[in-house]
Structure formats: structure tokens, C-alpha cells
Image (tube, rainbow, N blue to C red; front, side, top):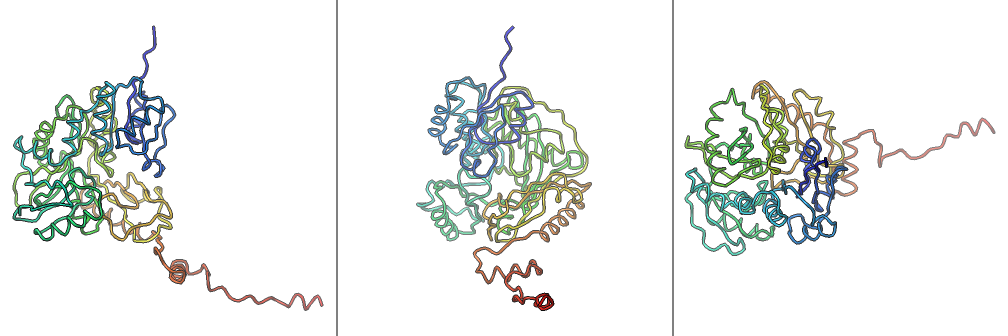
Length: 451
């Protein structure tokens, strides 16, 4: 009897957790990766997978040409899986062209284009912030005053990049002009600002039904963290202690996902809980897992691997949801740096030795530049996931780790003069002796004795 071949997926983008899931499930993969992953050193393709380098993994022509050159276009694929926010729609088009499973391009676009997304969710009766489309930020025209603070954001952005709050039409025009100068993006959305807490729902959809979900919240809303230049934090609610939170989020998530048409896959949704006590307001939703350490938090708290579930969903397999709720709380915090050039910082092992730390990443290499101002929620030196018995203990442990990390962080001033660097080094390492060594004075005593 002939041995059945392993299923093969086309992965659009590098995702080490999906790589691990492929290896565990016996799935072969062809991996499309671009300059960003290659230059970052993250494009390490496992032996049983085939890597295909492409100039731009978001560009259909570049992807098809690269696959053709590599002899990987005219082969059998069981599914296409795009885990990168910017490649979801392309993944749908590739699946259609290759005749295999994959999220449809039409569904993917509803999870990317915020105007289409909010229109579909609003039509389903879910509260959504009022918004106005700005077709071309370079020629915005007259924007109706929404009568309150507004948020200006790209129509299909990510990570709060090129996003700002404006209080009136004059501030809007100034922000529009700034984005027109600094970004190649043209189509934006302006929507009402919802004052309140920002929640997130991460989960799994199977057969069009919500199969699993977890609720968390940002310590500060993403936009607030960027405005205040504070470290982003993600706190996972406990489904037992915080049962009312899960009961409030579940029907909103179900209705929104049904309206957006997700049949099989994972998602990351953001909701707002207004300060005035009104109902939860839909923010936006992505048809991929959340960034930062969302996967690690969910895996630690619930024993659910969102990367594996994304792969299983892509192949049409049933979810493997053996949920085990770990008691207590888990949260993630960014580890920030001071402006300058990174010289040294604590290692992952050092961070994990701190009380409550369960997982950590150091993401900037020595010699990397740290900007004085960060403009999105992806800027950090590292991240740490911490567990505790209660939120108060989590707060204390985060404060301890951040203080300890900052005390051991060594950052040289950027673009400094030789004199300034000498002064900095003398202050940082007083015993280094650079630049102030004593003048040479030979010892003549031994020579005199021999004479």
C-alpha cells in the first residue's frame, strides 16, 4: 500500500511558532520570506521546509515569480496560510490561483480595510465608533466635524503606526499634512475617540462558530501608550475571577466575527469599554493572532497554541482545544530603552531569574539605535511575560523588573562628539582610563644597578 504523503502548506511570511506546529503535526511547508525577515535574522527555515526569498512578500507579481523561479509554483498545495497582517489578502488570491484551501481574499479584505470592517459590523447591530473615510490624505477635502475628539489612522495599518488623536478640524489638517509628508500611505480613516478601557479578544473560529476565546486588556490603550511614551502592557483576564468580563465580550465577538465572515482560523479583536458605562464598542479585528506575547500568554494561561490552531484551521482540521486554565494572572510588558546606541543589556536568562518572569525576549542587538520617540507599539528592547496571584502582585513585579532592567541597561549617546563619548565612558566605567592615562616615565633603577 502506497504511503500517504505529508500535507503541504504555502506559508506567506516567517512565523517560528507555525514552523514548530508544522514539525509537530508532520506538515511540509514552502515558506515565502522577504528582506525584512532575512535582514532581521529571523528567516531560519527548518530542514524539512523550503524557503523562497522574494523582493516583496506583499506583492503578487514578486511572489508568483519567485515561486516559479524556485520550481515551487506548479506543485500540489493543501493550503495557503498567511500569518502576516499585510499578506492576508494576497494569501487568499494565491489559494484561489493554486486551487487549494485558504481564506478568501474577500474575507481577508474585511479584516484589513477598517472602513469595510466597521460597515459590516455596524450592519450586524454591534456598536461601532462613527467614522469617515479619507480617500487621499494628500487631498483630504472637507471632513465633517464629529463633534468630539477624533482618531486619524490608516485604512489598513497595524501597530498604531501613523495614528493620532485630533481635537478639531485644524489639528486634523495639520496631522493630515504631516502624514502626507512622512508616509506613502494615502487612504485613512477618521473616527470618534472612545474614552475608556481597551480590551482584546483572542481566539479560534471553527466552522463559522467561536470555538475558544480569551479576553485581555491593555494597561493603557495603545494610542495612549504611544502618546505618553509608556511601555505597552497586556493583561490577561481570568475566566473564573473575571467571569463577567468574558460574559460581556463573548456575544460582541460572536456577532462581529459572523458579520466579517471568518469560517476557520484565529483572530485578534479589540473592543472599547466606554468610561460612561455604555455598551462595549467594536474597535477592529485581525484574522491572525495578536502580536507582542499574545500567543505566549494564551498558551501559558489556557494551554491553547494559537499558531497550531491557525495551521489546523488552514488545513481544514478540527481544533485541538484541550483547555486547561492555569490559576492566577499573566501579563506582558515591553522593556524600553533610553535614546542612543545599545551597548549592553541583561540577558534573557537574567530576566527570567526575576520573580514571576515566565518568558522573555531581547529583540535589539548590541549596536542598535534606540530612538528618542517611538511612533508605534512595536518599539522596544525586549518583552517579558510575568505571572502572579493577583493584579496587585503583577504591578509590583513589573515595576521591579523594569527598574532592575533599566539600571543594567548601557546606552551610549547617539551622534556624540569624541569629547562627549569620552565623558560618557568616564562616567559609565570610571576605571577604564581611556583618554586620561598618565604620561610614560621609565624606571631607571634596574639599569643603574646593572651599570
